Image (tube, rainbow over the protein chains, first blue to last red):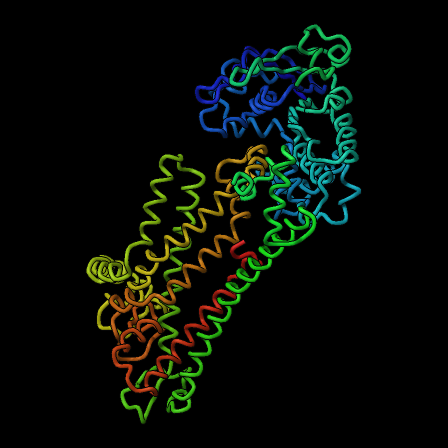
Length: 258
Length: 350
């Protein structure tokens, strides 16, 4: 169930390139934390280190500790596949498995974990689709391919797929950037519901969205191209948007640069 | 002089910046084409180019259709008189006797059997192997290994057929003998491994099929590798983020995406195997009795029979008999292609 995340002195490298420098932050269980900042500042990179997805890029490496309820997910004993089964992720572009039915999409993660009891799968499928506010729209066509849904529905299907395995943390990488405003609103409402049960970290380019959905906001920045990205400041969302400590944060959220 | 140079410059950039240069352009062009506005003039000449180009492209497209139809027509016209003079049943007779032009008696039963058996056997070997190679190259091998490895596979396609034929009969046939013997001794009750119409177990359809499998491996692998490598990153991430292992990512994202391309590539390979001539002619021995539908049969395929008889094409009627066999091969490749399209859900070659 919902767990807390602590990053301690995290440095991220791609080969020789130092992508992100010295990130320290904590995420409380059952809360929403948003990462904002200009393109290339490393916020998506940091997000991807939280479920070890960055390891799919050859040469990627992380120093420091990423603690999930006190346990380092980079411990020698744990492997990336196991970590990803407990930390769900939703991507920028909705990516349901195009040839799978809606039902198979939702329970894909459970099947990977070896659950094959049909009754159990059906229950989880319905609960997850209800949890993702999609049940009413698709309950009559669970056997149809997931690729036939609209973009917003596909994204909610991906959220249903992510929560079907009851993850400890839910990561969202710009989940609304490919969606229209109405679908975006649906996802934002959903995030507000989901935070009652899940720890959520969301990367967004939309500062209004960060202000609307998150309890805590982290601002990332980089000094120049080729320099590593840094966590400039992290605080309650209301503080960041009304009275930030750092001048750079103030400049960014007021639209003076970036 | 400067005006003319400006007029010939295709870039619209200087015209926008410098109105004088723009009008110079207009004047020069007006010499050849008295249209009023510069803009409409540009689009009308562009329209002409467009029309010419469209005719050129649709002409080339049409040419292909015409060529295929012409080949089919040629085969048909040449084959019909011989088919009329045929004393045997064209489809069910296993003999192909054209020695006496006044008494033709030819059928394609054995040609069809040998062609299909050898090609399908080759496909049965090549499909799993090329799938494995394509997955290895795109999903498992590091880039610096994958690239040279892929070159080597492509190189297999550049080896001339005659070399495959020599290799098949001189090296492969004796090497396969123990396997063939074992199969016949232990699985001989199954018709494919039953004793065939040859006195020996080398130079059989079995040997030929293995040679063909090596020959079609490059094309099948190349097509499969290409579609697998184009699997969208975000499909694979969907599986990875759920905690899928490498193999599970392949099963959930790569295979569903590449399936139709894999089938298309295999069918291209099958097409090549059906039509392969010289290697088959060298490797598969001629048989004296009809086919037993066994992999240890000998005999001729359509292509190897026509090639073996080509030096004796002097009289029209016997030649027509071979052309009739060629027509069947022609139709067979069409059928294979059509089946591939149906199986791949109409998505062959995109």
